[in-house]
Image (cartoon, rainbow over all chains, first blue to last red; front, top):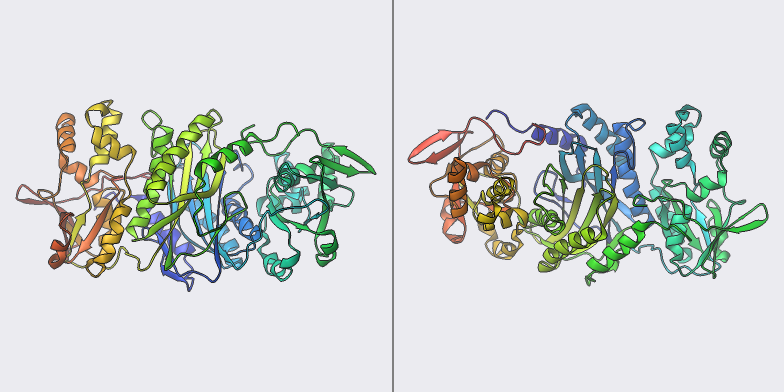
Amino acid sequence: MQNLPKEWNRIDKIKSLVQRHNPNTVVGLGDDGFVFRNFPGLSVIAQDMMIEEVHFSFDYTSASDLGHKILAVNLSDLAAMGATAHFAQVSLGLPAHLTQTWLDEFYQGMTQLGDQFQVEIVGGDLCLSPKATVVDVSVYGSCETPFTRGNVQPGQLLLASGPLGLSHAGLLALQNKIGDRYPESVLRHKRPTPRLDLVSSLHQQAHAVRALMDCSDGLINDVTILAHNRLGFQVWAEQALIHPEVATLAKELGTSPTDFLLWGGEDYQLLLVVDETDRDRFPEWNVLGQFTETPVIAVREDGKVRNLETFKGWKHFG
Amino acid sequence: MQNLPKEWNRIDKIKSLVQRHNPNTVVGLGDDGFVFRNFPGLSVIAQDMMIEEVHFSFDYTSASDLGHKILAVNLSDLAAMGATAHFAQVSLGLPAHLTQTWLDEFYQGMTQLGDQFQVEIVGGDLCLSPKATVVDVSVYGSCETPFTRGNVQPGQLLLASGPLGLSHAGLLALQNKIGDRYPESVLRHKRPTPRLDLVSSLHQQAHAVRALMDCSDGLINDVTILAHNRLGFQVWAEQALIHPEVATLAKELGTSPTDFLLWGGEDYQLLLVVDETDRDRFPEWNVLGQFTETPVIAVREDGKVRNLETFKGWKHFG
């Protein structure tokens, strides 16, 4: 028959790029649904979307970057639950002008990351989106005991698995076309690493993990969620790790490095809540501050404490 | 703090609308991921996206219709695998002007359908999409033994769980602003019913189910997938059930009712492949034709057989 949908060839090509044959697979990619044997323990699922000109710009995002990042932000959610990742489904809405080469690079970026953590792409959708590229990924993982955003108590400390603000510095450097001088920041912005590498060691210290979440929308945003209108939090800005590139960029742009720490999003580090007495169990982690009884978010810096009055984080619907 | 993200209130409101408390839930909606105890048998997942002006138009689609339909098309995939549905995750990209009322109606449409099949919405994403509304849903279900698109053989028959072409008739009626005279077609287009109701009886006859898929992109599209370049198919157009509204609309628009049968998509009926000798085990199902050894798609109508030369189905990337 003439004129068969081009979409079919594209889907066959994608299938050959992503298929990995997980031993638990029962019915693979290409049927109405994907079927697999359950893994030991509990199931964990998450789903996150990225939209052109809201979450990324093609001015500085390659197909491969996008494929990496949308999978990374989803795997980060699994890491934050203490899960092992297994499968991802990918829905992609594309303008008609995007080519097969673009698609190949997108899935190469995604599978390069997936292969690091034995995550296989097993389904999803491919459709036309004339006005903006849209990508939405759902992930499936498993765990024996999940870590949650929990029941945080006053006096407990908040630790981070790495420096915060670096991704936002990368974004600003790219937007100001000075990305070449901020390579680490740009890399963290374009290709964040989901901290699945920490899951196993966190489970070994599970008794000390009071709460865990990933830092996707900026420290204050995420701390406010953990405090849940019930508690406050004091950021210990002078103790928090500020990456040298963040310090340099803040100087260059005439802003405060602390603002990157407080409001910068998309670092995808893990935020861990522990009792003060357990802090030393996590020597690699950086302390960010302490939860307080009074429901106020404050910053201690240069020996002074100031309350934060206005929220400046992500506000897509602001 | 002033100026907290409006998105937070929206998410709280959505949570209160959709939460149902499945007994298998371990960590509910509102953490980094959703955690649940496995159901007996195998896991089944699927994911489908809909984009404004590609898959639907707000000229004739209400928020509630959209919420219903995007869940229905996903549940239809689970039905086609012979699965029982449990959970859905919903990513929604919305222009800034859409209101809380719109969101409420969207989730009401979705939960009304979900509640019919004990499906709970347990996660997803909500973000700004300035240029077009986008919705992507992933579903999770379970089954003991999946039905697949299988290894279809010449001589086997294709049956449908209901009339085909009705949804496409509804779409054309809406586009021509004569929807009020085609109520059944319009209803099937706007609010298709996933055939999860048939799953249990199909399992009772599992030995006779040679292949199963859902009919989402039109009969010829889906038959071509089942035949997989290896086999042909002869549509028995004179025997296929044509709904009276399709016959009337075809006359009104000066087209052939058979074209609705062959090319009309989005009916979300199930397509079942059986051996000829098993046809009588499925008396409620309508026979559509027979797979043939020669890899040609043909139509038998008014005593004549004609080969289909050109593909006219869904071609988003045509």
